[in-house]
Image: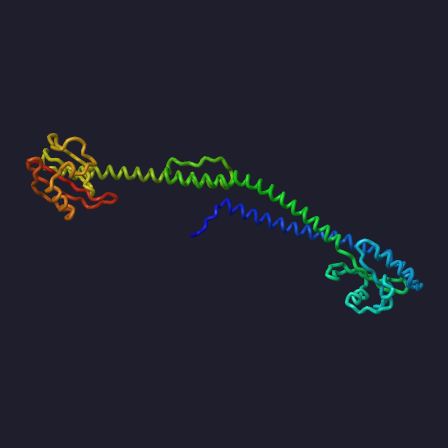
Length: 364
């Protein structure tokens, strides 16, 4: 058993899916751009720290002022979002660290290698102690000596994550309100402009089956739906015309056939006291010519011949006539204690008419 889905429901589902897809794509694009803006704010702060620290660090290194360098590193780490700061020499030896015991150690980890290979400010994502952070690095450049050290510091991404979560909530609320309003407006417009006319077409087709010739769509629309209505009305007019033409043609054929039967009957009349009946294949009288003193009275058209002439001999003659078409069957029968000469002759089927049987009853 096939499950039928209403066309209105199909259009609603397709529209809803398209809308959700477009909103999803646009929301994802917007949130990605928003995330990049939040990240740019953090990176702008990191670049400012590097730029402001450059001259101080150069001065402390060239003057071997470790106390001042340590104080500056602690000052960098006091900036919001900065988790730690380390200064390396060209070979990875620590020359500045908030933990004085780390000074002089030589780091060979991938982050240090990456930091001392940077030629300008760089950053990368890094997971440290199960937490995602942003690692920034930049060379400390002296105008005369060139790069004399490298700084590397980690920055928290909490502001990015928090801001993104907050914006996600706003985007969800906006999408929900927009989708609800859109669907309400869409359903109203769709029902008035499409669904209701389609339903009228469905109901109209049911009415057409009951009375085609008297049915007509009445809707004042000038779009594709209106063209469908107009096309159906034109088709109904054409079909009605064909039906009327066919009915008119059948009437003409019936009149011609009746005249033909009357001509055959007239040519077979033996005397003026004969009763002439023409019956169809169902033994119903379709033509009658009775003399003035006939035992048959009143209008006999459409009556069954056996109902007005209940005679077993006549039934036998009729049966013989059907079984031997185009042959004249004659016999004498008795009706109401009076002798009659019965003559029966069948005419072969002439489309669209069934076999006709001529009965001539003449009193003896």
